[in-house]
Amino acid sequence: SQTIHQWPATLVQPVGSPLSLECTVEGTSNPNLYWYRQAAGRGLQLLFYSVGIGQISSEVPQNLSASRPQDRQFILSSKKLLLSDSGFYLCAWSVLPQHNRFFGPGTRLTVL
Amino acid sequence: KNQVEQSPQSLIILEGKNCTLQCNYTVSPFSNLRWYKQDTGRGPVSLTIMTFSENTKSNGRYTATLDADTKQSSLHITASQLSDSASYICVVSVVQTGANNLFFGTGTRLTVIP
Image (cartoon, rainbow over all chains, first blue to last red; front, side, top):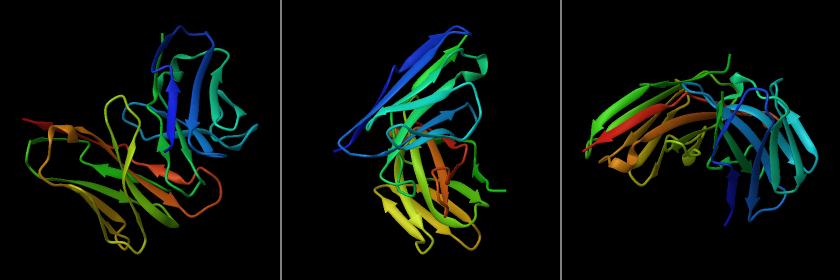
């Protein structure tokens, strides 16, 4: 069966510090991978998605970037965090974009 | 504008009681509608997915309905349990290429009390 992992589970970082969140998927090959952010009282916002190694599409211009160094690894990064980057970050995968999304456990990021 | 609206924002019910959550959408062209359950601090988990031609779909004590004409969906929970306490998110998918084809509601926060 397929599983999706995210770490860390929680993170508290000062403004201006770098960020690296990691997501890995097991039990499937060549998944479509996604990074979402969930702010309080708002729906999930798609940040990045990837259809293959090294292929990244950005949906929202922002302070963040994403990379896919391996087939089942997706990384969300920032060089300098802003207060507005605080939120709950969810990684997800699907077989194809029109198929069901399977979400990871999420990372709670607090920028102080 | 493609939007998904859910009501109520929050709901408190007694254990064992039934409840119904609502979802209205203006998304077009419609592909499918999904209901997710999200426990606090966890990722959403899919409950049901319905296409245009499906009116009702059940998953245990969860029953989702879809009226594609009025663009409304509901999620009915029967004989609620404490473990049903969570946020329930309605997600509507459009027919388009690319990955940004999902529109998320803000969720209904359900609390089941003993």
